[in-house]
Image 1 (cartoon, rainbow, N blue to C red):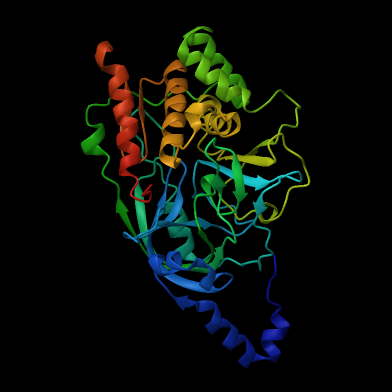
Image 2 (image 1 turned 90 degrees about the vertical axis):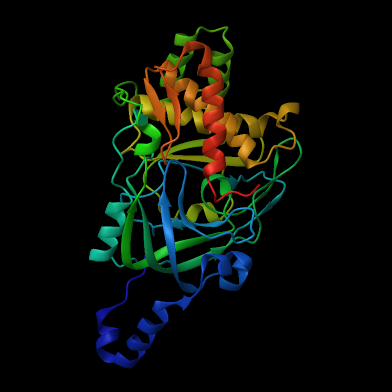
Length: 382
């Protein structure tokens, strides 16, 4: 990462002062950037927005911008070691043998100002909500702030054909859904608004799941299979998601990593490795929030998506992102139930599972809750 040399500033005060002004960035709104991301590509921009961190989100929310995805992905520069971000991120990258289009661009590094405002911002967005049973990626607050950073626009977006196969690799963040990304340089005017969980989880009294279990997420998924029974439909769904990760030591184009949400410059280019379908699937899990059983539950979500994208089976044809994620949340929830969660809540407070529900209502209530959660994510309009 580049750093300014003190000697230059001491001998060229005027130049440094001008550079500091440029670093403040051009003012823009989320909607203005999303309307034409290429117009802002590589520029330092200042945006006042609401920031949300959740299970698979770390985004600047737009008002209704008339876009399919009304948000900009937020990333910290490499080496930040911040606490906030998505608990789970699945990003696609073109493999060496990829036959479609890919977005390979060089990006100028950004240096983050780690002052009191940044620490406040990072702390608020990483303070967990404790309640509602087991809740992955649930934080207490959303934050409004003025953010300055480098805007990245993809030359291409992630695009699939009717069978779900990936044709183009571009975009940013989880599932490469976002047409633009902001790599944070500084933050100011930080204010928090607590998320209202209480009205939704008022009947949930269960404690969070015991987070013991294997550190290998696939092993935990195998345990969930056994609990349901090998021939049950639930076990087969979990098995399919687990199989997506391949066998130990197998190079199948699926990578598991641990860390918080930082810019990964390696993803901007084509991978040096091949993949069965020409796509590298990079699964990033936050080790501070996902351990043992919760890590296995989250891995079920990513595995289900990878399996669907690679399968080409008829029931994947024509699916949009919401439908793809709905199936993945279902697998995640099944793994949570099998591994002992007495209640399972999504960020924002949607209760997907409660062991106190009447047995004859559980299946319908679980499915309805997943659909309601996806519908509440106003960032999506597809």
